[in-house]
Image 1 (cartoon, one colour):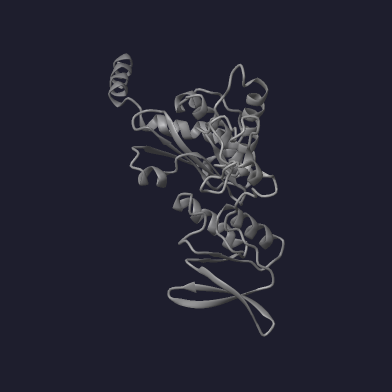
Image 2: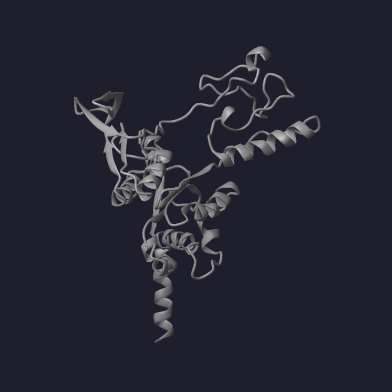
Length: 305
């Protein structure tokens, strides 16, 4: 398996669980490099437990056949190594297919990323031709394609009366490894790299009753907030059904709801969804009004005599 991103990791684990001997080759120092290091570590541990051989820091150089054996030649620490294989799967990114549609004949331009150039309303050079999905970018997710399709359809039907700009302000995604990884907004690494102030609140799913009962007591919910406030900047969830749990935070970020609103919402017991409420509770405990609590304690001490 060439590639250590989400798709490469999903396929590596899937084939390993189906009985294949899998070697995953990634040139970066860790797999799933877009996520925080602790996320990569948890996923890597799971892949290793399933028998996947992970070669990070190994750059693919070429493929050759020697003595009837197919080999992937990789470079690591200045030396070349041969990785024998029966089948090679490449998951190193993809480019949209923009040929065969007649774009050249129409003069419809492409962006530097080789996607179809559109305006904010998803119109091409011709206002009656719209583009959505991978060919339009900037995201390569099925759910963002469906999201764009709504804007394109409404603008095409009613654009002469009112048009809507495609909104990419809150985009979630998930990686369907075991454990699942789901994220929306900023990661801790991205916030640090961009100099964005933040606070981190983390809740370990190993403490959740439903996860313990189901034998899936691993992973965490990590929420980034504006310092001193409950406004959510980003959420990363690792664990069983992480993609499903993330939806509550996507809704909150989309409509400007903070952790206090999540904490004040009843979550059914025992469910995995309680992890979101408990994460909000961790934030609340860290921001409890200590001076007020001290006065409350004095008041009740006085009442008890």
